[in-house]
Image (cartoon, rainbow, N blue to C red):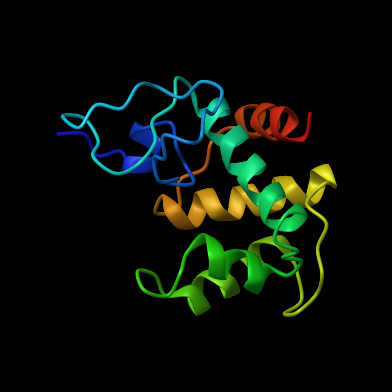
Length: 140
């Protein structure tokens, strides 16, 4: 039995739900024998790219500008301790509660992505080169 978290196993460190409408780059064909709910990717960089693209959609399409607004949509309170998640991301990114952020700034996106990966995967951290490449692809 693998001790890796589901997000790491699936190369989906944001634990993005599988949705057939999302044709993410590097997304693997669904296989219920492997994973019933979450998307799977060919490499962590592809999963990080999808995570970043989804966060950008939250800002651009839905107008979400604060950590609380973004995380409340990302990790709804029906299945998460959203307040704790928000505090963790704010702490890990050095963002003051209620402050507006701009995820198109690479350093801001990098901090946000690292904080989500850490929270979703029991403290797991990818090498900076992997996160850098995933974020670069998301912002391209």
